[in-house]
Length: 254
Image (tube, rainbow, N blue to C red; front, top):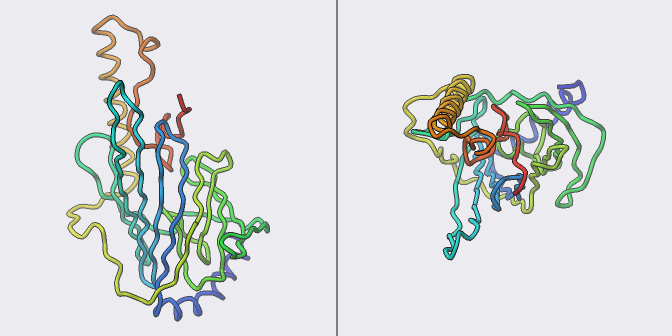
C-alpha cells in the first residue's frame, strides 16, 4: 500500500464510520467471467459499519442436447466479511464442501493516478496482483462506506468496478442504494463446525486434482487409449478467481 493510499484511508475513517452506523449500502454488480458454458453472473453486496456479505450468483444457460432443452440452473456463493476476516464456502469438485477463513488484509493496492466515472461517481484507479491474476479496480471515496465485491478489500472507499487486463474477468456496479440501517447482516454460515485456512484448502484441491488425473490416465491405459485422443480432463465445472492449477485460468469457448 503506497503513502497516498495510507493518508486517504486515515482521513476518511472517522467520517465513514459515523455515517455508516446509521445506514447500510446495497450494490448490484454485473459479473463477466470468460467460461466454457454460456452463463450469467451477478454479484450483490450489502455492507454496514460492522460487516458485509458479497453474494455471487451463477445462472448457467445450458446448451441444447439432442432434442432436449435444459432449464437454466442458478448457484449461489457467499463471502461474509467481518472487521478482520472473511468466511466462505469452497469445494474441490468432489465430496463435502469446506469452509475457509482468511484475513481481510491481503491485497497490496497501488494508485495509478487515473480515474473514470461510474454511476455518476468519480472513481480512482488502483492495481494489484493476487494469486495468479492482475486486477485493475475503480473505487470512489464519495460514498461514506468501505465495501467491495468478492474478497476484494483494502481500498478507502467503495469499489464500483474491477477487471483483469485480459478482460477475462469484469465486474461493474449497475445499481447502488443507501438504505436505513436494518441491523446485523445475516451470516450465511451460522452452523459451521470447522474452518480451515486457504493454504490447507489449496493442498486438498491440488491432491484431488492429481488423484483425478491419475485415475483418468489409468482408465485410458486400461482401454489402450492415449491421452491425446481423449483430450484433457476437466477438473471442475467452476472457474476460479485464484489460479491453483492449470485450467483454473480460463477456457477457450468451443
